[in-house]
Length: 551
Ligand code: TNX
Image 1 (cartoon, helix red, strand yellow):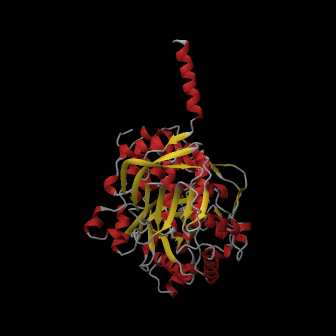
Image 2 (cartoon, helix red, strand yellow; image 1 turned 45 degrees about the vertical axis):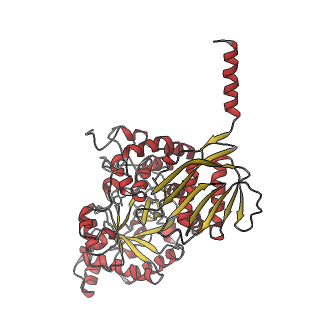
Image 3 (spheres, helix red, strand yellow; image 1 turned 90 degrees about the vertical axis):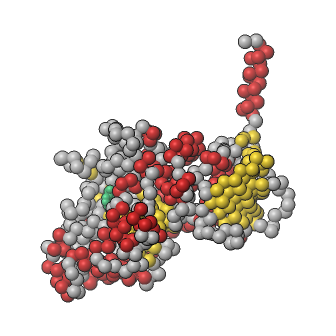
């Protein structure tokens, strides 16, 4: 190698390190895949620090959001200006425009990169946020002086109206900062719903003023199971564990989510999974004379008494508490649980039996429906509609209730045939608390095996419903994240990534555009760098552990 050549190499390296104009990320990498991308190879729009974000008044919060996200990602700190008040100084602009003509579908946005400007059009918060997510994906994940965005025209809208992620904050609780991060993950992936599972046997996680013992007693457990709940003998630590989100924290989270187009559906799980409630108020249990503890173990179904007794004090409690929680959440929907309500405790309880007779209920299943209907009535007074786990269909229920089906296609078909709207959240493959590998050294999970490809290939609409023209009853799907074996945010991230990314494409992208090989390509080139940018954990072995190979 000549000295001259070495000098040349050095100067090249030097040049590369100072040149900070970066090529944009490819539009081919956008995830979830958009409906339509028209590339024009004519030109590009340069965004540098002199460019402005110009917004219609409906999108002031989203303009600030884009500004912050872009500055954090690229170092480009753009000025934000209300449309009509722009001074005409900027050479390039990013317009966030309200448009209900071009935008003629629910949750639709368009994005054009052309001439001197980038223009995102939308008619509501959510779809403007989706446009912003798409745009942010075109910028590199590093500090730059300017970015050249290639001319393009994108038209995009979701396949399903309900696109959710659930998080159980009971079995383990996570700080508000992580709840916000989780909401950011949802927003990036163009989900629109965060299902916040706030109460269960192992704790009550939201501040309630009318029944303070829910927090003083019900939010705390004396110990936590170590290892798997099937281990014999069961082992426990001896650490008091718990806490709850204050009303101010809840309001803060709701506001944070709203800016990002995410609706929060709270869940207060009744009439089973109520061990924390009866620990605080034994008078609502079928054994009022008993001192209950907040559960310290997992897998409560049937094993321990955790149901509410149908008595006047219980119904007064339910009405008061559901009203109190309803007031905190703007969501039109409220989740009242209804799952895994063991009937044996009601069978053994004379008060419950007398209640069943007096109210002409058929049996304990009828009593379960009675509870659901009562609470649905309380929620109606607050203008809320009800979502419940599919067991709410055990009796005959008002059609306005949305069924969240954690069973398989069969239960989904039953619910749709009974003319209920259905959210599909089948254990297989949408329980992200199940294993994603068969590696015996993999970190602990509940059981099951839901590898990435199974999530990607999941089809929410069963063929039978399509044939019977009942497919419109399936309004979407959701992954559930039960946190028995997730004691930290890092473990939650490890369990959701990359499966959540796969689900986002199931829910957003047109069915005919799905392509697993291309998805994995984008995952590797564009999305995993995002996880790293977020400092998030993720499961790296997704390509090894598939449902195709019999491992
Ligand atoms: C069943 S699915 C539950 C949860 C558990 C989960 C574990 C459902 C509605 N209830 O209480 O955490 O299994 O996978």
